[in-house]
Amino acid sequence: MLAQSPASARNQALTGAAAALRARADEILAANATDLAAYDGLPALRDRLRLDRRRVEAMAVGLEEIAALPDPLGHVMAQWTRPNGLLFRRVSTPIGVIGMIYESRPNVGADAAGICLKSGNAVILRGGSDSFHSAAAIHAAIQDGLRAAALPEASVQIAPGRDRAFVAAMLQASGLIDLIIPRGGKGLVTRVQAEARVPVLAHAEGLCHTYIHAAADPGMARRIMANAKMRRTDVCGATETLLIDAAIAPNLLPAIVADLGGLGCEFRADAAARAIVGDLPTASEADFHTEWLDRVLSIRVVAGVDEAIAHIAAHGSEHTEAIITEDAGVAEHFLTATSSAVVLWNASTQFCDGGEFGFGAEIGIATGRIQARGPVGVEQLTTFRYQIRGTGQVRP
Image 1 (cartoon, rainbow, N blue to C red):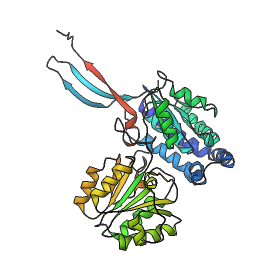
Image 2 (tube, rainbow, N blue to C red; image 1 turned 180 degrees about the vertical axis):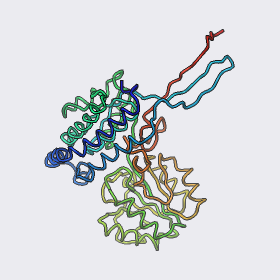
Image 3 (tube, rainbow, N blue to C red; image 1 turned 90 degrees about the vertical axis):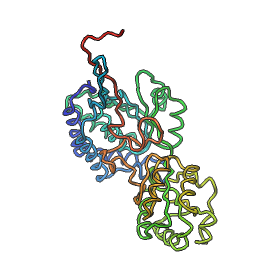
Image 4 (cartoon, rainbow, N blue to C red; image 1 turned 45 degrees about the vertical axis):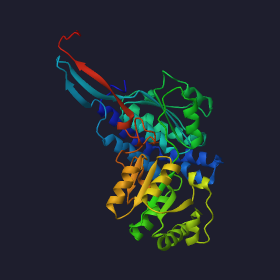
């Protein structure tokens, strides 16, 4: 029923859910307080779990923005007529039933539900145990929206408890679930990819790099680095490694270290960087393969753009990379030669976000090379089928 529902009904469900999130804000925050009181995980990841009125409002706005997007279903993506008169059309359709497995961040449930509803997909949500009460309260608001639009409440389901066996059942549910999307740490994604008997749309770690080229504007480089690393250190678009050209490192690197150090950042640096700023801790090779998700930055001095690209290819996760330079030719080379899902020129890596792309929200960041790449929004959760119209043709 959801796949055949009119866009107006799906949009009504989304705006109704947004209104319900605002109306239920007190109970959502109370549920979140219960989760926070029981949280015993890494302190650096606690902010992922925390909700406040601003974040609840952001969830509501995200649903409204998704509702305002064009309907992704029923588009004629291509059409042609064969010599025998048959008219072929490739038409966008939903994927089917999405299984969404995510960890601490409770707003993911609202984003995933909104994107799936807009794209005509049913979704089964299994949030992390840490966010169990928050996820249930958010789900109740989504159900309010579905009821207001007279759409099936089963279009958005949630795991009934914290039993890990439910995740295993989802991964084995071939024929019942059409696509699994894991959103969380490396351990979760690795497990899902290893155990799933259902197609998986996954992302690797967010091991993101910012490369400061010799022709960078120093003030711009300092502003972007402070944002790319320190705006939020626990998001997958945060810069984890700074690459800086040797030609400008002696003048610029001390200022960047001072900027970020003043914001509470720690560092792991190669020998060339330590020769410039002597008190930096030594970086091991493993540090350059680490997604810190914390106030830690790896630093390497490079000889130029090709060495930066080579470092990213050897150490990155094909998530998000940025170059800071005033040299357009070098920038275009970096944008073309870097194979990551998202590449930016003179902007913070933290713009790798579905909302910033104009998608309203995202269901995750895809780093594979099949189907979706980068932020996954409503269009990325559609597939297509062929409709063929004839006038009595038979095949000779």
